[in-house]
Image 1 (tube, one colour):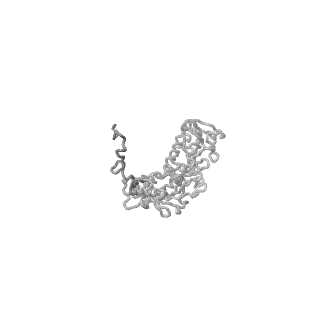
Image 2 (image 1 turned 180 degrees about the vertical axis):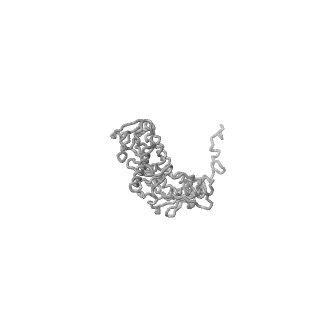
Image 3 (image 1 turned 135 degrees about the vertical axis):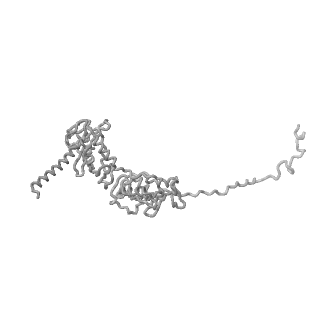
Length: 393
């Protein structure tokens, strides 16, 4: 049986080793004294980048985190929606490359001039970035300030202590809001894959565009009421192309959004190869910009769907199924078009009537019975003529 003193000694040794490991890792990432000109601002960061599990950002009123590793990161502040891996990689790469160009002031009263004062509500444009490991131990930390005027990529930085500030060689892009870390392009979709789109309103009205063959150049509007016609030949393609490029303003947890409403509109897109994408939109109550919440789902229809299409539907659905996306007003309204938005009344052409007939000329009021000099007319006799007869004279 182990003696109490021996057990206590083992516990102490274990704790010291653990603490030494944590300190050693933190020391690698810049805690071993201030850097000098030409040295990395965060010493040893390259050695601990693979251990980063949390990126902690403090800027103004915003304080949020990204969770993950490698190229897989998410934002708890946005219902754990995936962060753009390119944005994260660019940040970490810039921090690792950043070197000291010039040592600046150590006077805290002058930090604000450089934008490296204490970040927070009154911290101007300062942005503090901390890199944490799986145990939330700080691996590296830096405050990013203003760009150096006229220097291209140089920026003012300092460590989150009272040490000197620096001019650093690498400008660091640190989005100051959670949405800035997200790729807001939700979908790019080839309109030529679409076979049929149906917009269904809660009152039962449907707007339908389709084409019979994928090689057909145009989409036709279906079930057009008598006496009406498309506003333009492109109305069908405009509906079919709604998924061509979809961006969003924000993303929230779907669980908090009511979609079973009288003003909900469902847009269903079916492709020639069996993919089905549905977009349900509802207005955001009291939104000053008139925006919409949208839910997307993806599945397949038909019996002969290729495995690649099934995989596409599964991947898309897993990406979007837990979220509601905030669409700008112009895009949300496109998903909610009605027949009156795509059709016009047909005005019947006037049929030509019978040709007009010229009226017959009217007879003069009085016509002499005989023309002067005609047979039977009164003419002067010879006695009444001047001498010499017929005036030859």
